[in-house]
Amino acid sequence: MADLRDTIEETQAFYDEYGTDEWDRLATGIDGALEFSETVDTLASTLPSSGRVLDAGGGAGRYSRWLAARGHDVTLLDLSRGQLSVAVDRFGDADIDGDGDSGVDADTAASVDTVSTVSPVQGSITDLGLPANTFDAVCCLGGPLSHLLDEGDRVQAVRELRRVAKPNAQVVVSVMGLLGAVQLYLLSGHNVAALPNLLKHGDYDSALLKRHGYENEFTATHFFRRDELESLLATAGIQVETVRGLEGLASPFHADHIQQVGGELTDDERQALTDVVARTNDDPIVADLSIHMLAVGRA
Image 1 (cartoon, rainbow, N blue to C red):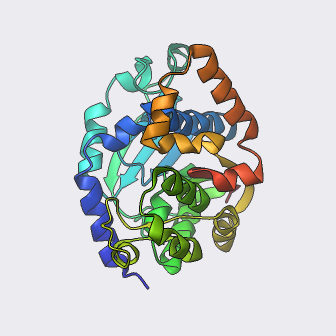
Image 2 (cartoon, one colour):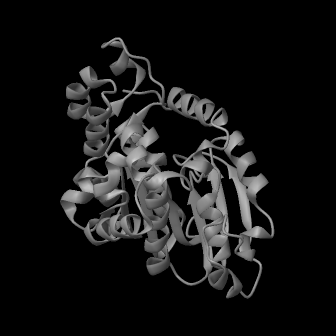
């Protein structure tokens, strides 16, 4: 069983040193662009048009900026002071000016009647320290739940997400997918000897990797199967409405050598790729194979 304090300290230290990488990855490459666009398309069709939104584990705040540009008042909560510093550097008038960096087009940004706020707060998703029944929608995007190795801690975190949501509010959560990760490591030849054991439990950590002579270049991560994510949310009383892939069939583009192929695609080919991913992400099999999968539920 992983100790929560050790897990939090490891994750916090990793992201404190991560700089702008988390911000940048959602704007560069086919994989990051798909994860961001598929996520915000889902949010646009799911969330209320205004209100208070929690971006729990929101890191450098790219989703918070998008939410603010849509007219929401956002609380951005994250463990890492380093990531929150990056977020603060990115906030300002550009949040609603549609400068292109926020991921919101100018027409959408221009339709915002009032200046919405983003309030950064340092905290843990296992103990949000926020009042109950506060938010009109709760988001936990990019995989913060995946950095909790202990199942009990993951249960506590989703209970916290539900606790701070208003009754019947939308709860939107994305995690890192086990089959997507295993497929990626097979294609890239990365830490392959550890993969049979990874499939058994989904925990990618130093203890697993050291047994096979590898070093952990990431931080402790639990990779999910789709049905596991659904069950986890259900334990907190969150009614799951859908689980979809984000990168979906294009998940292999996380591998550097495949990413290079993506750079050679024409505009028409790139659009065709995006269309195929969007049309298949709702398939349960595709969701389970995606590097990141997203669940939409209701408190």
